Image 1 (tube, rainbow, N blue to C red):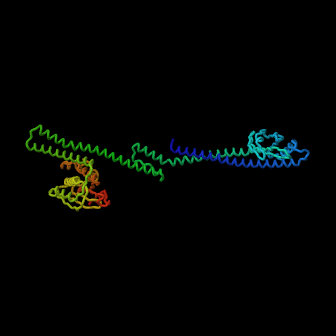
Image 2: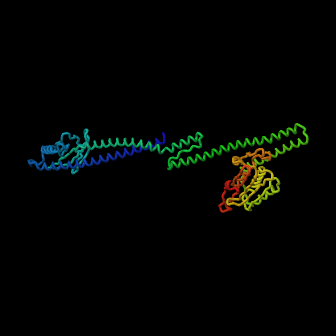
Image 3: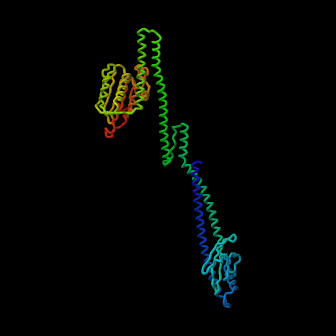
Length: 484
């Protein structure tokens, strides 16, 4: 059963029970009030008849010491005659509770008569036929005789009124339930609309449409649930896209690795077979051995870079405090005397916190890439300065530059902008991937700004430890636009 139908059915059952119980008590309370009024009138009527009987008995000529039964009958007949048209019935009984006079139609039941006691008045409601009566009985003392007077008052109208009340209330209840059911149907449909929209959204996502979002139609708890669901769906979609991208990256990695591995192996096997199967002159022998050596070194470099990336991803950083000048001094020793690509160094003295060897590897890879991208004689600039969020490093070149699309993918393993240029320098597209992983360990990332034909700038910030600057340091680096 749908949730909206459950709400509707619950409301109808609750309303029916409330109206039924409330109607019963209301109508019954009115009926009891009417019966109390009728009983009071019956008691008053009995008192009046009692007084009238005693008065009539006193007016009878005193022929006898006691009131005769014939006189009792005569008085009863006179009293009944006076009450014609009122629907009043009466009965008179002697000391032995034997009936002396009874109106036509008076019940023969003597149960109330037997219960009458001295100076008391008894009541009961009887239903001898299709009518209801209040039977009232009391003791009378007249001329030294004890008699019993009973009256019957027709209260059928009160019972009929109760029956009509129940009928009217029942019909009114049915009408209210029908009208309220229609209203509650629309209300329950409106209240459960967010649930239906969420159900539709879950089915869409189950079918693979992760971009679908549920419509938020309210600002209450259901609206908040819809908002949270859409937020969850957004996070899920991002995670799925990341997983898909990761799977694609792994496939690309395997394909690139297989290709990069195949190329040098083919050369090594071909020239080795040439050396093994033929006698070559000294020059060809040297060239063949040189090809084997060169491709072997490229394989060695590629395997070492891969190993470094794997170790970096799985390793734990063991940072230590050092002076930034140590890193610049290392680069000066490596490239300071180079003639093909002049290096200039501009930096500030400052303390940094990181793994020395890993940071050296980053700068060495960036400097090496700058050399590969630049023509001979072009200057390469290495910068360093203290900033609020950490120590800033940058390597600038005046080389061929990188397109915007290549900038987004250049840190992927085996991705090379110019494969022919990279292979000629024994490159395999792993240097920047290694730099990216090392920077992740340091809570940083590589920022690239490049223009085709004008050169590139590779920069990163090594953040200060929180305790070193009172917690004011930021662990993120500036955006590419901040690179100078």
